[in-house]
Amino acid sequence: MPFSLMTRRTVLVLGTSLSLAGFAGAAAAAELLNVSYDPTRELYSEYNAAFAKHWKEKTGEDVTIKQSHGGSGKQARAIIDGLEADVVTLALAGDVDQLYKNGGLIPADWQKRLPNNSSPYTSTIVLLVRKGNPKGIKDWGDLGKEGVEVVTPNPKTSGGARWNYLAAWGWALKQDGGNEETAKDLVTRLYKNTRVLDSGARGSLTTFSERGIGDVLISWENEAYLAANELGPDKFEIVTPTISILAEPPVTVVDRNVDKKGTRKLAEAYLNYLYTPEGQDLAGKHYYRPQDQKAQEKYKAQFSPVKLFTIDEVFGGWSAATEVHFRNGGIFDQIYDKKS
Amino acid sequence: MSGANRVLPGFGLSLGYTLAYLSLIVLIPLSAVFVKAAAMDFERFWSVVASERVVATYKLSFGMSLLAASINVVFGLLLTWAIVRYSFPGKKIVDALIDLPFALPTAVAGIALTALYAPNGWIGQILEPLGIKIAFGPYGVLVALIFIGLPFVVRTVQPILEDFDAGFEEAAASLGATRWQTVRRVVFPALLPALLTGFALAFARGVGEYGSVIFIAGNIPFVSEITPLMIITRLEEFDYQGATAIASVMLVISFVLLLVINLLQGWVARSTPRAI
Image (cartoon, rainbow over all chains, first blue to last red; front, side, top):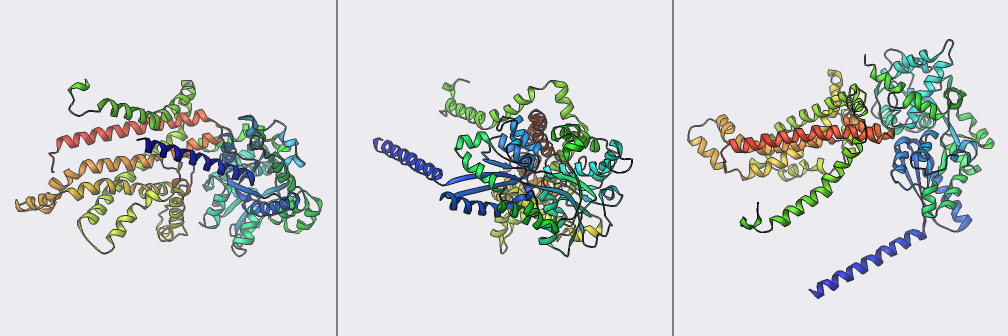
């Protein structure tokens, strides 16, 4: 008996010191967790390597950056539920706002902390069709036509899908004689033409490109270019609509988490680096529209011209748009609840 | 109920342990669902759980789970029969394959099934010209639930069938029973309780399944939305109460159905003479 007791204590002590050693080891190599949305995988895998190199040169410290990708809303909720993200790079300000509203993880004025509404790059929503555009899709209005099958994610779970929805709505408003009614009519017909509602943008891209579902994918501009240029220039074409929405995916440090983990300085440097010429160049390379003049010039040729409107201009900001369109029982739900 | 009358010691300890363990692992997490849902007033609770769209998901989730479990009972029994009663090359491999749906992450299963049954997939492209759409529709849900439920039936029936003495069948045959009579009156009654258990397990698993179904269903409201997706959707809206309300309804329906199956099983076990 005494022997077994001693063994147990020894094991306990050993275990404790081992876990302490593990803890100390983890603290020495700085680590950041960037929680992002679906289509930024390629951008951040390259950006993280570039930043780690930059940080090593500047400070001599090693830094490991972990990435998490998923539907933007789901990612925000994971952080509220305790995922210890140091920085978030989500699809829309509405989702980042939730970090303030549900749990006070960041201050109310988080979006003023970095230039350009905290959006180091912008994007827009375009249409991806099959090669040769067999259904003759030219603009948003064609998505409501009979016989056109649309693929778009569920706006309830996907940030990108909200931009998609709002872009179509805004286009309809800006047509001759456009009003709330015609806009609602267009999105109703658009979603009646949708056979698959994936939970995120990447899922929809897979459904469209790999599973061969649908005639048109409503997509982030960068996703569309990725699909057209890398998955198969012989398979897809990009149709840039006449009018679309200016999507501003914002970034911020998660104050409560960085203060707890002592990573604020590193996290801030990580986000600031997005605004440097190197960061801006990488954004452009991955088909995001850079904010920096020089990078804009460099990548100008790769984007088709499109008239862009902002969410503030047409919908009065994310809170108002969410309240009217995406809340439980909002217009998006009404499309489906009026089961005809 | 006094312990003094029992021959076997340790009743108090084992019951106490059972209750404490069950509370910790099952009851407390589940009651948290009800506590959260109870914070809503009844009107709001009802408007959430009885909305047309949510009711449509109950029908799909419970209907498809029952159907998938029924299909699994039939084909699971055949499979078990083949594995237990015959020997053939590769039998061990077949036996091991049956457990795969247990081990495979459900998302992987969902993606694999979707790739197979999509209109451009191996199986989907054969079915598409026939007008049969599996992936991105209610039947996709069924296929996924059949996949994940199969091992439950096989693994519950297998040991019973293995223990079942072939001598009973020989006796039946020598007493003049036809093959069909032997199966129906001798073999089947002995397997029925295990089949019911397998059915219940496959059904319960199907109702709660999210990972694989979400990829193959298409998730269109009123057509191919499952109840767990409604719960997730509520969570995405930061409506924790709404999510727990739907979850609590699911729990109650599942509990009642499982209770009925258990009662049925007890009744079957009592009304059939023990074969072994």
